Image (cartoon, rainbow, N blue to C red; front, side):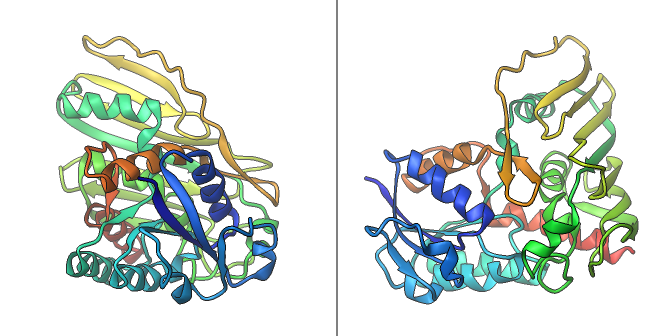
Length: 332
């Protein structure tokens, strides 16, 4: 049976959800949408129920809620949806604090509904190849990791939406631009336990940082660095992870973790990468993360039909990423 979906938030990422769910017509049926901005609702098919209040949407007959709103609203909306008996798929970041994450997980357990988080980079082919190396122990002991998120976010980006660039509503660049990358690091090496961090705001009139550097240690003992910067001239330059280990060195990169840039692993040939990942394109002259949402949505469908779904992130795992981001910021 098709999964009946309601989407809360039809801004940039909400529209991506809408378009992809429409394409996945064998698995999904969009039955309701909600946005507080009437302009975002003007072109919606009249067969789809339209709401301005998300609580009214939650009263409709839907199985799954996609939450695509500003960061600071995720926890409240997810908990309310779970309490109404709906499964929840929330965009990154899951929320903005460890306390909120814990409350969301508790609601999922209490109401016996799934709490899932969008982490589409786990489905990138280079990421899958590195995951296989780590899972099978092909790299041996891992020593060090470096993660670079060097992107462009111009002034228009922060002016487009009043919640962006504010501490209370966006939280920081790690919650937004670096969230997917930190998810991968925590997936592979465990939560961040120690951090020493420097941040700055160099090129934008915003409350949060637009660049930073963190030296970190993961639960597994792996040490590393995370470097992020939204001030790259003109366009995104690089999003990469380099792993230095006992039996090999690998770097996956490109602008969207869509390329294998270096591969020297004992007994393992460089894999061929066939998939072509395009960025999410948004108005305002900027590009988002790689557009791999269809893989996430197909995995969610399998999960709701009680089938095995690889690389899907549930709330309890996503919380480790939130905890790690919080630890980095607390070390400043």
